[in-house]
Length: 469
Ligand code: UD1
Ligand code: CA
Image (tube, rainbow, N blue to C red; front, side):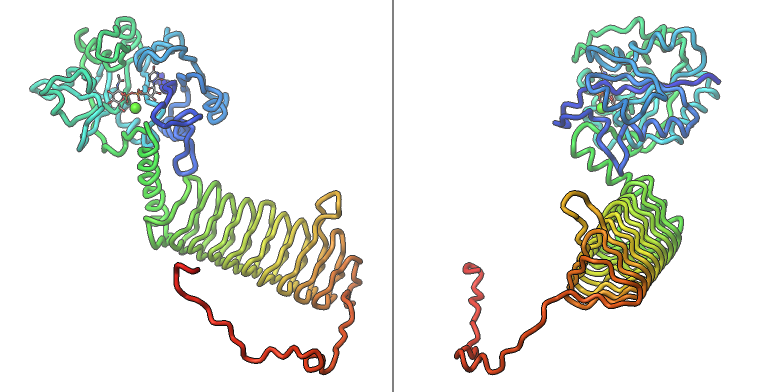
């Protein structure tokens, strides 16, 4: 069967009050129009034409050159939008699916149902409809006494009886291509909005003697995003669907209202996701991990059995059986191997950390290569700027770094060496050696008494009245 799709995405999206095209706003980490594209691909429809307007570049950036684009110069309505694709449709047989570009909830299942109904019923068109609790603003589906679709009337053109109809037009359809072409040529803009309505093609097809079928789906699946509130609603609904999918796959999610997971994320079974966690981009998490609470991972790959608590990680790889956090910051380009411990207020950037290494507190590791079983004392800093470039240091296996040490750019700490606490190391330290770089301490006996500087117990009393704080 010859099937193609037209997606209407030229609207200004005025109600979004945005500098960007409405359909490139993201829902669960994916642009709205990409949801539509993916649903069409999943339903087996690869040949897609997008009707685009002034902000077409943004849509092209999202969808690339695998689909066709037609520019609609003036937005004269949904019928006019589809007319722009006439040259593409001419001479084609089969069916054409028409979808709005602003409906991220459209599913392959709904599209497949409409195609199936089209084939079985030999219809001129099939309209996808839904029952709305509040149909305000939507086109209403008018049926005859036998229940057959007669026409679609836009809200603004409805009479009193039609306003009471709760069945709405989703703006998703399948048409016989040749019949759609013949109906488009006869549309007029004689209506409340002076626009060419695509919905009027239904009336025309029926007057031509055709029968129009319908597929009724959940109202949620038809939800369009016209403003920021609907964007939030769509995000919530899609997020809950994503969470449910993971739960059905064996992931434990403690609080569905406070967990956000992007559509491309993968999670292994028996992993627990605690509240306040956001998993973004193409994050992949293994089995038996505990993530959260209050953790954000963006484009991070995590092995099995790793715990990440109250931490932020971006574009990095974290191995198996690691302990990360609380309050760790793993920045892009970091590779952490298995059994590594990264603790509170530790920041790592573009560095490689080998197995069993520990940096438990207050440490910065940048652009460096760290071996196995290294211990970072509290307050270690790799001073990864040589005055011109960012250059880290090399720390070989089994090195022990005492607290509050600075390791300067390019320095190599040889394997099994020790760094004395409080050192600023600016020369290589040989393997199995000790590096110590600090001034000698001098003690002055009885200095306090001599200088009359005894502090005693003169405690300062805090004023705890709120207004004074
Ligand atoms: C449309 C339907 C209405 C349906 C509702 C469902 C018509 C006349 N009405 O109304 O029956 O209940 O969707 O959400 O079709 N677009 C263009 N070019 C244009 C005009 C619109 O590309 O000239 C695109 C928009 O970007 C949007 C889609 O078509 O993605 C729908 O347009 P919109 O103005 O949102 O239609 P509604 O008033 O919501
Ligand atoms: Ca709309």
